[in-house]
Image (cartoon, rainbow, N blue to C red):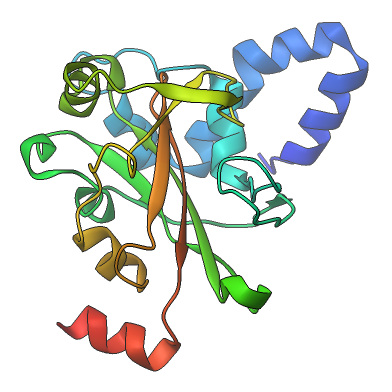
Length: 214
């Protein structure tokens, strides 16, 4: 089937009945069609449902949220937009996990590049999803740290509360190497449903290639 997620979203806005069908059936089928191996893994090992909902996961697969001034990433403003195709990697996700949480499963996208953003330089936005976040070591660690939720902002995909992984010092340096970004420029949030939203300042291409080789 040739899925058109924009059309699903538009019809959901104007028809309540269609919106219910989309939430229960269409977004689930879209997710399985767009990322079948990832969906199979997210449901394996006794995890019979994706944390959050299918509509939120469908949006995460195809939409770069960007950011607004005064939002999650301070004064940076980059409009959100649809992304035609994005690769999500479980292997890449390991680079974003603190050492005590390496057994968790996190899928992370390649960075969506927004170049020449003035003083901010070249920005790379990324997003991701935890498998079984409710029972993950990352969530347990955040709770043990008594981490506080962001006081205002909510997850752009499911409207759940957000934890700041940078603020809790839970982002390893391997994340910047994976993204081809400057050290300590990576920041990401994770919501109660395990959705990840992040940003980094990208190195010039030649420098990022050298960092990857190291």
